[in-house]
Length: 188
Ligand SMILES: C[S@@+](CC[C@H](N)C(=O)[O-])C[C@H]1O[C@@H](n2cnc3c(N)ncnc32)[C@H](O)[C@@H]1O
Image 1 (cartoon, rainbow, N blue to C red):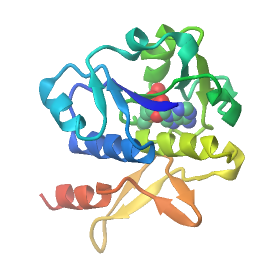
Image 2 (spheres, helix red, strand yellow; image 1 turned 120 degrees about the vertical axis):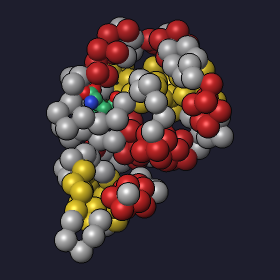
Image 3 (cartoon, rainbow, N blue to C red; image 1 turned 180 degrees about the horizontal axis):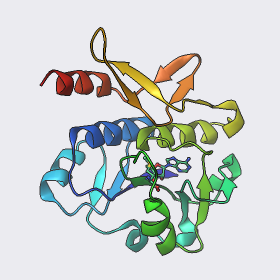
Image 4 (tube, protein in one colour; image 1 turned 30 degrees about the vertical axis):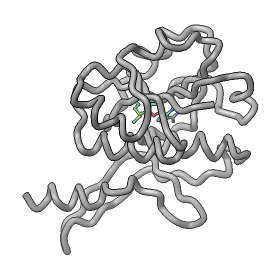
């Protein structure tokens, strides 16, 4: 099973890059599909393979598990059996999810196993981590997920991230580099 990130953002912002890099590290590499920009491809190729084609041209539905918040069924370890690709949307979270995974991936992968990871909208890398923990035999019920994370950017100011992040063994797993990035942006 390998991680496939279907890029659906036009620009590789620093935030998106940090999430992609972390997701690829969790899965020991990734295939980034739908990457048409040469600049984006160059940067991502340090962390995985890059393909300009969308995922539905690279994999047949029966080879794939698609993670979609709108799926009817939760992800279970057995869902990985006999499948080659775990597809996650390369989509930055929206405060109110727009259903882009369903419209842009699931709708084109009819016949794939479409699964959710609970009710909370996770970041790309957190979705990759939850899937990895499920692959390692944890159930979704056993995985602690935040609904919001506070990042202090000064003595009196905080940024609230309204996304799901994993708390593993009592430790919040925030995207590496994100706190520093938010602090830098705040100081600008
Ligand atoms: C930040 S989410 C973007 C979701 C997007 N706002 C939408 O409405 O579809 C990025 C990706 O992580 C995965 N993901 C995040 N939360 C999920 C959940 N609760 N269940 C299944 N997949 C999830 C999906 O593959 C999704 O495309």
